[in-house]
Amino acid sequence: MAEIVEAKLNLPLSRKITAFQNSEVFKILSPNAIEDIASRTIAVRFKKGSFIFIDGEKAAFFYIIDSGLIKLYKGSSTGKNVMFSIAKDGDTLNASALSVDRYFMTAQAITDVIALRLERKDLFHFLNKYPNIAVQIMKKMAGRLDEECQKIVHITGEEAEQRIINSLYRLSSKLGPILTIRRKELAEFSGITTETTIRALSKLKKKGIIGSSSKRGEIIISDMEELQSLTV
Amino acid sequence: MAEIVEAKLNLPLSRKITAFQNSEVFKILSPNAIEDIASRTIAVRFKKGSFIFIDGEKAAFFYIIDSGLIKLYKGSSTGKNVMFSIAKDGDTLNASALSVDRYFMTAQAITDVIALRLERKDLFHFLNKYPNIAVQIMKKMAGRLDEECQKIVHITGEEAEQRIINSLYRLSSKLGPILTIRRKELAEFSGITTETTIRALSKLKKKGIIGSSSKRGEIIISDMEELQSLTV
DNA sequence: CGACCATTTGACATCTATCAACGCTGGTGG
DNA sequence: CCACCAGCGTTGATAGATGTCAAATGGTCG
Image (cartoon, rainbow over the protein chains, first blue to last red):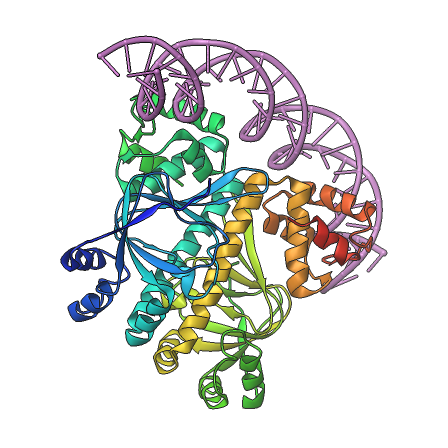
């Protein structure tokens, strides 16, 4: 069930380096430093639907995403999932590995994924060697903390349709106007049930903000300006 | 209205050092390092109700709390506040200052507060000088992120009474069985209205989990074991 | 002592979760 | 290659929890 399906993969160093250069966290480093770190990574492939890591397990690895989409979520005792973010190429996974010894959410591949993997102890090593990374990672974490706090404000203060609008805006700002996401996942991202999410989407279709394409697992934003202006 | 009322204060170095030794983030440092940092701080007093900093302002300072309680919250466009945590002596405020250039929540004194203040640039200076601090701060931030994510899970999945139970448990674990907190603040911490919070508290009184003291701005946990066993 | 604000309780409105049913689609196995 | 079916997407009806509005009580502070 909750099984991790991965396969190691030979990826040329040049491509690994490109991935690091695309990463917010690492691009501030010198080419030499990037090569130093990149050459220590192992490329791993995850099939769509497989797990990169699971909430509660020992945090062994740190990842940089080369390609693909990954959803980060937490399950609750009542069976409902809550999705916190969708990570894409250039993003790091599990920056918290530095400090917390267990993963505190689950990472699952939405599409096929290629990621570069670094062992926890190697990450520590490089952190000492290149202290700037620490500041970058803190920046990332502070941003994430801000986002989650903002989300709590919205969940407690806004109604369903507004929350869907906010969610769509956040997601499309990062991932573009074509969202590869199921209704259920958008619901989990917004903290609402699937049915209520669909009802809100129907209204947004009527308003012309999202397309009426009925393709499964996809939502298309057709009026980005209007969406932004409605976002709070 | 949103005015910062503070007064500088002469505090002996020895007391400043004690504050640092009580701090999760700094106690791992050598006595020399602690003295080094502590001697750069300025002690500041805040009267009950006054603001240490305000959401959206330029993040100029980093604080270590010497004494008193501070609530951290965010306001929403609809007028509702959301409270994220209550900081006490030994806690750091605005660790995110390192990375984000504006405060992203408001800090307000619940009681009279004495805090040690460090300029942003000094914090950077010490971070380079004593790199271990960075890891400690990241640890703290990862913990905060985990807490907020957990909170989102609870808000979306649990009912009001359960959320009050969780909130009371979290708060009393940190602050002890006597909570200096108004009903409204507990409501803001739990993401519920004051009225619903009070109704939940009434039930908990009947169950003997909290005391029936009607003192204003105070909630007393009378059965900590039971509270813990009910927490999810 | 009086004004103000926190706390409490009640009545009511409403949003959203829940349960149910059905069309459709994409993937799978024969 | 086609038929089948599990699961997604959609809509409707209903119940229930919580927000909202209102009002009374009681504690605190000047």
